[in-house]
Image 1 (cartoon, one colour):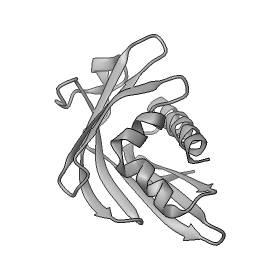
Image 2 (cartoon, one colour):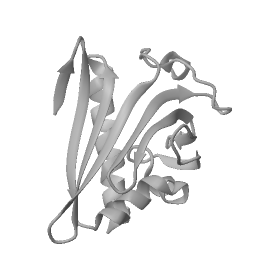
Image 3 (cartoon, one colour):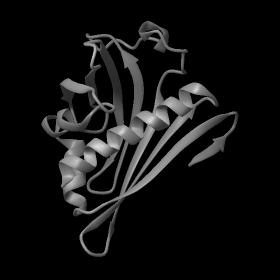
Length: 161
């Protein structure tokens, strides 16, 4: 699902995970768990560092099946335990410096895209998960982001079993 926001699109993806909300929360809050699912299908996450607090920074690395590393970084803007995580999203180099997407051979995106994760407890120890990625422009990068996030979430669902 995509929602228009003044010339750009917000990518919105919702899922229901068949586990309690605290397990989904931990999978996002604990870098050791993030390493198990971060990245699309076939990718690994050899590095996941996070200062998981408001104004804390994260630096994650996704490694492609061909061995190419893609780094991302951002700042946690809001953390409401068990309910909501808001963070900026940028491509980065290995030192955590923000770089344009062209650094990785992709079309450039604006810096400091914003990702909002919300978790809602639903009956039967299930969790409604919603991801909102704001600032994506129409076209190929938005479509690739949707495919990528869905593959991340498929991997997350597997480790939550």
